[in-house]
Image (tube, rainbow, N blue to C red):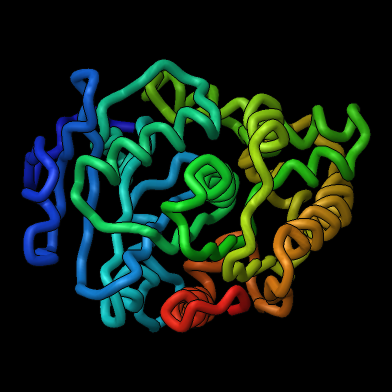
Length: 307
């Protein structure tokens, strides 16, 4: 991974400058402590939708698709204001993160603190509809528990959850953690600031937090099984060679239980499990994610607790 500096499209340090007249923005925002984070916002309307990518995922994660359909970022921008941002250590292609580095690994609470500072400084008005993919789903849940008045709705896109650990034995969870990390040793040699997380500490943080208040929630779950895929991924070097080739079936069973529990977090939550997609639902089925966001937005606008 190359470490060439990225161009800065916009540098802003004060509230109101970025969100003035709902102008499109793309650039660095000073969040305090001498740090800057990259943020993009587009479109107009309320509620503002904030997209939170999975581990090592940047804003660009929401601006790409494997289908000839609008991306989630562009599709949502046509119906309301949408923002996405880069956590520290989230590379953009072969280039390093546009946000300033921090010590790694981090936790969901660190990500929540950064997002809270970023939204406060940016001048983007809440309460927000938060959309989180994978690890980003854990982050938005903790944000909603920590700042309940700032969140009006949630969309969880095949979100990482503590229920995954709960559904596995300690031995299985040890393997699962390695699967989550993948083969990152070479990446760390090239880019030591790469985002890493401590999932156990993050799970403990969300357990210690207050539960979600009743709000519109849609849970999107992947339905393409890991079981048949793992042997070829191990053979290709995408996963550690000593991972049991049948472990994908363990993951599938645990994830099914974890996703079901997510859909039980608030009354009247909607669970969409027939997604015809693997883990990256926002890239494989972007319109499905856009539709879920629009459904939650409509519920927020009419003051309903159900999507």
